[in-house]
Length: 389
Image (cartoon, rainbow, N blue to C red; front, side, top):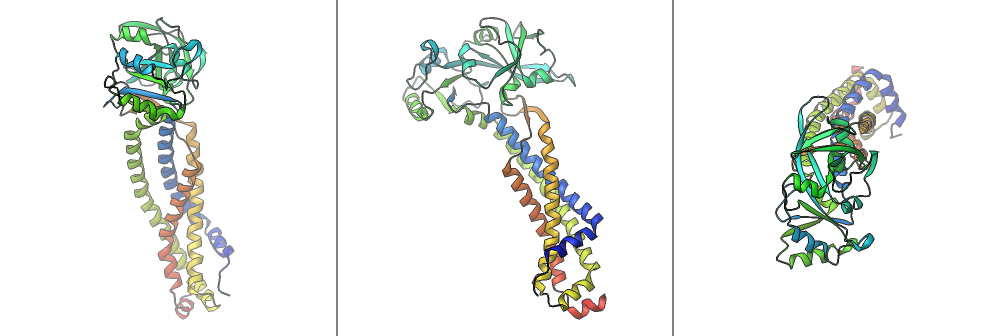
């Protein structure tokens, strides 16, 4: 007889239900924070990656990091749209969307504080290139008019975004005629209107960016090569998902560093708590440990039994922590994207990878917290343990 049954560890945890509950609860809170950080980062990345389509590319001025900073001449836009790698749509029109992006400020409904909002001027082709956008109220703006439509997040959080209301920016009044849902992408945090009207209102002779639909998703290298060979086209071309993903790098890094730092700090407390719990369990069961050794159980079996108890505590805490973190998916966060300096709404997103990482994190805490107490239990001398009992 060399192995202590698994049921032994379970019974001991059940016998110390209150202690088990508090220790597992501490670990659950740490795992909750850890999972929440990963979910927030994943939600940010997903919101921006979903903004783009793999078939579309974004063209901005070389050296610009965002569309707001970029400037493309109308001649450059025409040259790019005429490239053979650009697809054609109905009526033989090239699927190219020269767009104007400007930041304006709007007050929030709850606090009245103003935040930067992206307004995007798009031509009719720009709407065709965004099939994920669907109207949820009202209608799409009419070309050549002073009409705008607002994204779901804007409609929910900002004053003056109701259907039929008037927004004042660019020296003109714009009537809100529709609200749209872009599937949780970054477009949900934008206001759209006619590209030419926005260009006139904001006195822009040039475009901010150009969106192109490729004839073949794999023709991007050929397009990039052709553009690099033309000295008139000092531009940078990226696939839409990659372009918008790059917009999240600064904020993603901040969330990851800050959140993981907090998780590590909190985990030290959880490990100490687990260690105290297991040391107390060892102290309370000295005679029991001596009896197990007298019955022929090896030191390694005692060590494993106490480690299993610690791991069960950590797994219980990990499961509860992940379960609590999963409820965060019902919430949406709205904050400023530090690269574009505009408001961006995104939510928490739980993936299988985050669940696995969170449970592994919990198991590591259990191992670190339980190893020394388990080692102490395994090193007890039989005679001394039975005498102390």
